[in-house]
Image 1 (cartoon, rainbow, N blue to C red):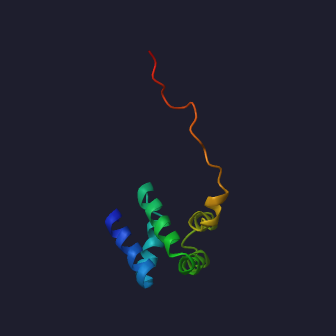
Image 2 (cartoon, helix red, strand yellow):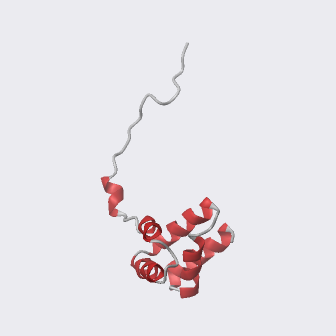
Image 3 (cartoon, rainbow, N blue to C red):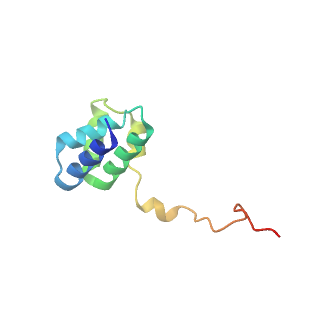
Length: 96
């Protein structure tokens, strides 16, 4: 499974609700490639409520764990609650 395929499945799932594409995204969550897993989670998250039902069904069929499901359902509202880090002294400063 490659990133282009996962992305196209994500588009088909988000835009058209193609169940086969959604199932492929669920399958991609089990990939050994971390980038594929992140992409699949992002595409599932983009579809919002549609994905919640799909993920619930996958958990019920034991195709994914509840922990994986919770990672996929990161709510957009939580972004506003995250602290914002300002510029700190972590960067390199120019010295004479």
